[in-house]
Length: 344
Image 1 (tube, rainbow, N blue to C red):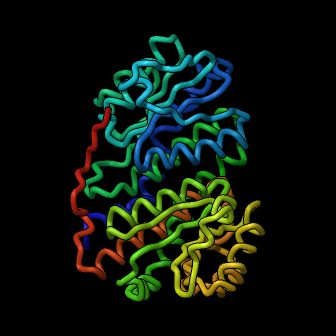
Image 2 (cartoon, rainbow, N blue to C red):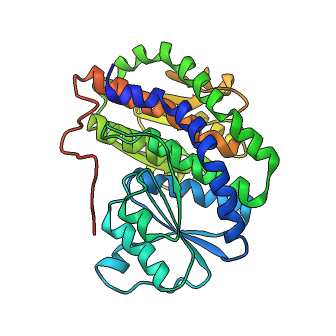
């Protein structure tokens, strides 16, 4: 078994450990921060940036906070940081090493704004720079492609959101999440042998919307970095505004469609894609949608929509792993990549 596969399967336990070790810390932290900011600014790169896209929907829908993703070059290359009055500045980074993310958080402190680091390394520059710190507690992540640190980042954001509102129902739903992740892994394992069908796939589109907009970006990133396949993410709305013209007979489109507010929109798009004879790979807990797929990727049923990104990303991770293996590539050492990337 590859390191990557082991780390994918560790994710339920990582979330259990995160909830056990960080809930008290997060409860104390939100008590100190409550009422101290009006909006949220997040600095992140790569998979962490995709976690930040999830935060835009999460904190907007449940906490009423606008969330902005920073442009770190304004801080590090142009030396013209924007005014951050009223912001909670959050840096998300699995390693906590990238200088541009650290600099955004440092600027937040210089402007006397509350700052929060979300990272796996308590000794990292990011955790030392921020005023507050939440540890991912995912253990060492040795595969280059991030999996368990990504879902742990989503877990931290989910815990923070629910704790900030004192939302008992959502906190209870969070406790069920590791079991739902395990169920999803079990559902998917028999399907993976069918990924061989896509061994010669040269390009792919990944569609998500709402809470799973960031999931589309994360799955596309995993497929790109693991398999060297041109893979582009879109929301279902943006895809209709032009890119859908690419779809012809056999064009692969992966659709993320758990039950929720965007399901009708996604279902309509699936109908349109079928008319265009697209090759449909569908991630869903809806049997009617899965029946329309060339490759059905089932997830555990009855997942609350706000938590579905932690579940829906797993089929994409496993698809990327299986396609990598089908092509004879090394899933633990994608060509041309290193584990820690430092950018200015």
